[in-house]
Length: 364
Ligand code: NAD
Image (tube, rainbow, N blue to C red; front, side):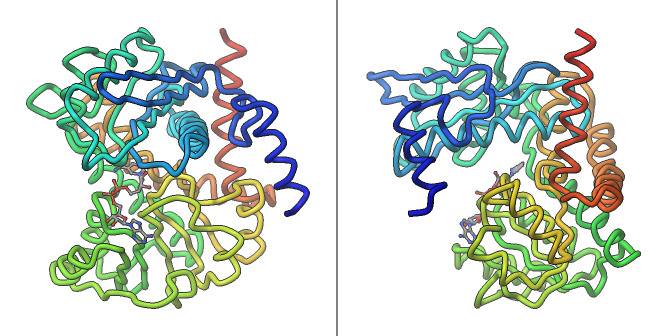
């Protein structure tokens, strides 16, 4: 075991919450337990300087409660920076429900979760994430107004995934402009890893523009379906060593890690997955040294939060799409600023977000 791992394990034992590696001055962490419905959830409120902490609820069968805590801490922190860099008046929060969404999710459990959200009086506002559907948010809405991502017929902004995909597409084009001097993706090869809600919509944009699309997923049936609709090629082999222009992680996080980073051959990384860098301090720098242009995940996957923010601010589809399209400009600015300051693109985006929070704090 390395010294770092030993130290991390010691910290875990010594201080189960504040000592967690992912703990980053979170304002509040709420553990929710209900014996009757079987609910075990954790709500992480990272920062509320810019506004209420908004972020989705993930239901996942975690290997351990430590994993669940670690996930909610990492995800809620990411939401703070996502909203800040996007210019939204929102703080960062996220919730996780421990369990299998396919077999353990019941309306009673969702309502009980909603009651816990309600008890925070609007400091945390929830939404969908992995394992959640719009219908679940409708159930939560029965017991609290502090929920977004509800269905359109109930006054919501509907499914955020196509908007997220549009933002990722804009970020990818900006990265192409930066790297190739031209944002045209026609003929560029793109490997989309994960063709779920966001990945498939992204493939649709890429197909329309004439990109050469490769797809990878663990769901065989989905692969065949997307291949046929969009004339994409199913990629078999080592995704990370694929000889493509652009690698687009749209499945799970941490796919850029010590094992994969040396194998990467793509010159651009632009995808929807949250927390793509396993270690955001180290891996952002390695990508820069390797000459790979990394479009920071929390910057280019903000379409979904822009979409749900519309429910709070009451703006419509046109404004949602305009704000999402602006991800192109912000990405380009951040890539240029990273180059000018000789820092990783992740750090450049983080600096913009942190500055916005610091400015607001000073004003208060
Ligand atoms: P999803 O569950 O609909 O799709 C994920 C896809 O990835 C599925 O098809 C799944 O089979 C596949 N997958 C899982 N493990 C894989 C693996 N090891 N290799 C290849 N494929 C694998 O999720 P989604 O809503 O499309 O979100 C995708 C990612 O984007 C997630 O990380 C999510 O947190 C992030 N994200 C989503 C939104 C949104 O609006 N939905 C917004 C911001 C960020």
